[in-house]
Amino acid sequence: MPEPTEVDQDSVVRARNTLLASGRRTPREEVDAYRVLARVSPAAYLPPLARALRQLSHDRVYADRPLDRLALRQEAVAAARAVDPADAKYADVLYEALDSCQWALYDIGRRAEGLAVRAEMLAVGRAGAEASGSGTVRGLSVWATGLLEEGRCAEAADVLAESVAQARPHGPASGAFAWSLLEWIAALDAAGRSDEALTAMAELVGMEATEAANDRGPQACHLYVLIRYAQMLDAALRHGEAAAARQEALALLGELAAHGERKSWSGYQTTFWSVLFSMSAAESERPVPGRPRPPVGTAPQHWSPDVRERYFDSREALRADVDRLALRAADDPDHLAELVRLQRVLTVRSAVHWELRTHLFAERVRGLFDEGVALARRLRRADPAAGSGALAVALTDRACFRTAGKEFDAALDDFRQVPELLGPCTGPV
View 1 (cartoon, rainbow, N blue to C red):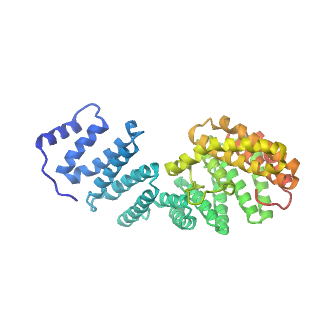
View 2: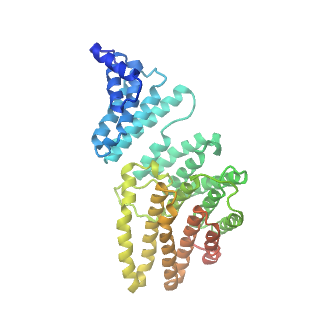
View 3: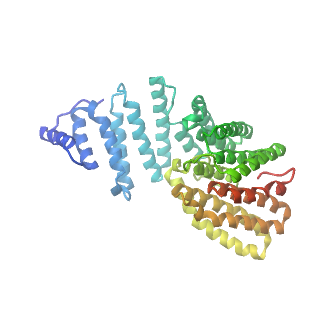
């Protein structure tokens, strides 16, 4: 920790008066005051200086000045590093400063530096857990998300296994366990470890079933994981088990159509749906080699800013591509299969985008789900074998979307058609 330095006493008095004065002070005035006082009494004022710098960096004046925002956050990191490591607040102050800094780095595309900061966050989290004896390591998920975006899926899966093991003793009551499992399942899938992913998904299905049965969680979330579990079982060629899971989902959806949710829930269940929806469509995505990719399985508010912006900004170009391909498919049905795939990519990105931004997301994307079903029906007329599977996918997508919008009768109408389309043996849906 730096030694106190000589500071003009008038400046010290003004700084203290600023902090003690009644009335509202601006974030800039607060930062300037703490900068002065941190030179006089580092132990007392470095932690609040780091916090004040982070707060100032969120001021709207920096919305179009990302480099200035980054400079403030780097100054916050420097202040946090200068705190005495023996101080009980040291780990928390440094972790929060690093967290704000990595977001600013990713925001301007300095991904390698951002990832390095995330690695340091995890190191700080491990040191803090060891010092406190709590066993709770901060930074596991954020580090894994960074790895996933870089395509380092096997490493991410191992990190998330630790995150799940850490959350498991607290169970679903912690609120974080289901999300940890979702992240881990997606990473295992992306790493090609399908057996492990299925085992983890079975655990999630069982947990959601218990939570719903005891009125501690939405029945809709149990439905979503059942349907995703069936899709994963089909992909693993375990079609009999997949059919059984779909029948269980159909019975649950029938109960929802007859009685509705037993309790009123927050928007949690719609975010849960959107994350599972993006997981189900991961194979339809075609990542560009060398480019960061969305960390499927993670809620988009936790993606790095540049990845999230690129993902959502792609919707306009995708819409244009879908429209161009639709013109070709009107004359040549051979383009229909690719049109169905591309339109689903557009639907997923749009659904995730609007669910993040408004509780009225259903009206923003309803037409896309209807369009997907209509295109799949066209494909089925042109190619019954390929079209039956595509239509089952589109109807399943729309059934889950309608469930998220609490349109349970319409969702049931869609999902009832799926088993007949798939038959006793099928490919992944």
